[in-house]
View (cartoon, rainbow, N blue to C red):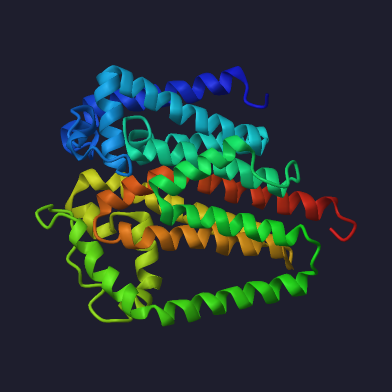
Length: 350
């Protein structure tokens, strides 16, 4: 047991405090997404087990307000503790992890009945599985981790892609290929991805015209679709759109609506954290860790691209959707960064 009783108590207190804050304070300034609808059983008339909204309403109606919040807190804490157990961080990194837990959007959206709670839980199980593969504790996901992967694939299939790609990358690496071959495979994979994207350009363009329709035009924070007007705009706007969709509110939006300022600052902090830790993971003293560099692409970059279409049109949605994956994402990057440094310091050439 690597998570001490004191750390567990701290995690529980943070989540409970944010649950009260979400209901008593945060809800006065903005809507708590679909939480109210889930608690009121708003989507029960769908009667469709393939609908995530129906299942969330089923939980809300069955457990009631208090039961739903308690259930959400248990699920959230369980996933976070599970991942921390797998990562086995030092005391210095644990303090950084607690800083991540205190970030406002993550604290709010993963402490109430929301899809983000289920994404967080399942993503933590899957990321724990990746750590098991990296540390060679396992050669395959456990049944519990596979259940987490199934849940993540059901809730957010576009997010689950990074888990499948990263597990495949780790498996190939464990086969003992030389670094040069792995770099060649990574290059070929990237070129194939570009080729597939070009081949399905028409279909991608069709989806880029549908996605903006899912965001309410009546919302004051919804951005006008000036981004994807032509066939190639999804790709040409990617360098600018990726950070915008990840960070959430822009500086101008935060200044125009001060309630967004904490989330803008949070987004800037997280963007800096991700870039810095990815650099630490892939490079150290002129040495390239090929596996870590590959995982930066298959895990981090793939996840950011998956989030890009759904975080671009509304800063509030960007922040909320991000809260489901940001904790396991940051912990996984931190883990491979620390492993990179440890391996280089213990190797004869290090």
